[in-house]
Structure formats: C-alpha cells, structure tokens
Length: 488
Image (cartoon, rainbow, N blue to C red; front, side):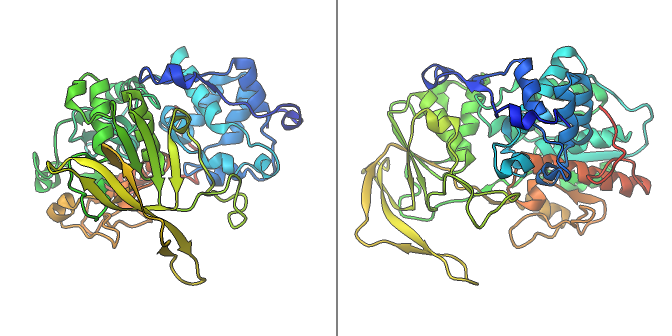
C-alpha cells in the first residue's frame, strides 16, 4: 500500500489555515487545501503494515490503506468508491471526526501518523467536484415502510441504507431543516451547511422523504407512527443537557452552549437577526467545559466580537504527548488545541465554579471559582478535592455551559412504552438494536449516549441492517465485518 519507502521520504503535512485575524471576520470554513502532488505524497506515507490497526481505530471500519494507495496512484474515483463502501458521509467525518484512526496508525508509534482524515476529505470533495456522487435509487421497491426519528448522522445513514434495500423511508425532524447537531450544533466555520444540503439532495433524489418541523411525540403521536409504518428507528440523539446546580444558575446571562450555538447557526442561515440571538459582542465571556462544544463557543464568541474569552475545565491539564497509561493504539487523552483556541482564549484547568454573581436586576456580573485536584485510589472512583485559599472572583457578562449531555429525552420512551437504561438512554440490544417493543429500534447517541459523529454513522448503518432483517427475514445490507460491501 502506498509507496514502499514513502513513510521514510515524506513528512506529515496537513492543510493550512487562514490567519485568525482574517478568519474571525466571517463564519466560512478557513482551511487551505494541499495541492494534488502533496496529497499523493501523504497517501504514499501509508506503510503497507501487516496489520492495519487504523481499521480497528475507525468505528466504521473504513478501508484506509486501500483508499490511501489509490490516492497515491492518482486513482481518485477508485478511492471514492472504496471510501463510500463503509462511510455514507465522508464529507462530514473528513471535517469533524477527531480521527481515532490516526491515533491507531502503525506509523504513529514512533513518527507522525498518516493524515487519514484530510485524505478522506479530499477524496469526497474530488468526487463531488467530478460529479461521481449521484443519486442511485433502488431498482426494486418492497412494500415495507420505515419511519426514522431524527435527521442527524445516525438517522441519515440509516435512511440511506434502508432506502437502498428498497424500503420506503420517511425521516422526521423537529427542527426547520435536516441535519440535527450537524446543522444546529456545529458552527459554519467548521462545516458550512451547504455541505449537508448537497448530500440531502442526493438522498431525496434516491427516494428518502423528509418531514421537518414535525416533533414526534407532540405534532404526531408515537402510536400513530406504529400504525402507519412497519418499523420505527429512533435516532433522536442525546439531547438532555447537563446543568450546573450552584447558586445563581438562573441569572440572565447564564446559557446552555447549545442554545448559543443553535441560535448563531440560525443567524448565519438567515433565519434570525443578530439582535435575536445570544450575543457575545463586547462581553467578557466565560465558557465552562473544555471539550469540542466549548471550543465551538470560543470560536463563535470571537466572531461576535467578545471583549474577552476565558475557558474553564474542571479536569487536570492533559499532557502534550500520549500518556503512559494510554499506549498505542488506544485513544489518548492528551492536550488538544483547536483552531478556535488559536483565535484567542485564556484556558484554565483544575478549576471549579462555585457560584454565579448577579446584580439587583438578576443580571450576571461575575462568578466565583476554586482550584481543585483529583485524588486517585486504585479500585475507587476519582475524588475531587477543593484546595484551600484558592477562591477567586471573575468578572463576566456571559457564561456558556458546555458540560455535555446526560442522555435522551423521555417523551418517546413514554409514548412507545420503551425501557431506558441507567444513563437515561433508550435501552436497545447491542446485537440487533431492537428495543423491548416489537418493531421499534434505536441507534446513535439515543442508544449509546453522547459520542462521536463517526460512531453515529456506524450505528445508523448497523441498525439499518437489523431493521431490514426484521422486515424481510434477512438482509444484504453490510455490517462492519462484511467483506463484500456495495460500492457508491
């Protein structure tokens, strides 16, 4: 695979960025692509290792050495066919996935790993540019109907797979447009929304129907779906947000990160005015939570024109390199500095917020924190200890809570009569994605809890196979371990 000596001849190169000063003036993507000769060199770095651990690192089981080899040889169409065998939407993962495949790359043991994610993005963009990605509706239709609730990556992947099997698929989405968190949780500077629209257009041309502004459980009851469809697949995500139960949490100026991000995406899309959203303009902003959502809040706040942006993380500062207790090929918890961090933020670790401070009119004016340390004892849960004499007050006008999600909402569970697990996710079998109610299935974050986009696509594909088998007695839709996978 690749060039035999490629990994010795070429160093890792990734796409560049426009300067922070220029890119925060708008919400457009700001990457600068490598030219084709450089991309071929990056494909050439793939080692042809005996066991491609990148396969195990990827939740989709992407055939990574195969498409790297074709990129190196300039066979872009063949690379696109291979990539789409296992991944319905590489244009999403090529922009948004944290690339666990790269952390599992054999070359990464003692060198910089292959730039798998960037190669993937360039393959699919080339395929769209050349017109290779076209609607491919099924030649034969069954008489079976499937309702999918939720149009995020899990729902979209399942919809395309079940439509390929010939079933009539309808996707229900409670928001105004299709995409779930891809559209309303991911800022445009990470993925412009026309990227979603062009793929949805292909799905519609293939025969998938979308019903937006339709809240299943309110606008249409679960019992009605059970009557109207032969199977129902729940892909509604894990949308119950974590709160911070401290004094002052109800002050004006304390907001959930997803409310902030969704409103801003609607503003960028022309659905709201800037005056109608949660604005960071001219404000001292504190983002609580150090993950990707927190990073998205930082980048958005800087584009609003925030006076200052500060980021708190209750966990200890990770190491720059791979921790000793997380050896290759496992996913390492190491310090991540995103493009949004580079645009301007002051980061603090091992810090806990104790109280929000407000004025007499209930407006946020500051908060109190304390420094903490984590106590680890073998066989016990880590314990959080506050450090004495480390209390501090911070001035702020806007606090964004990027604390993650607790689980899925219970409206559908109650109406369908579904069991939920101890994490308040829909309880569904890991073997066939079936719930305790016949004909009702669950996949994605709604089943497994908050996770990665690549896991959502994988879950949607896997669930589609089992829904098809339920409807037809057997299924030809691929599972991750299948060797005979369909092309685009």
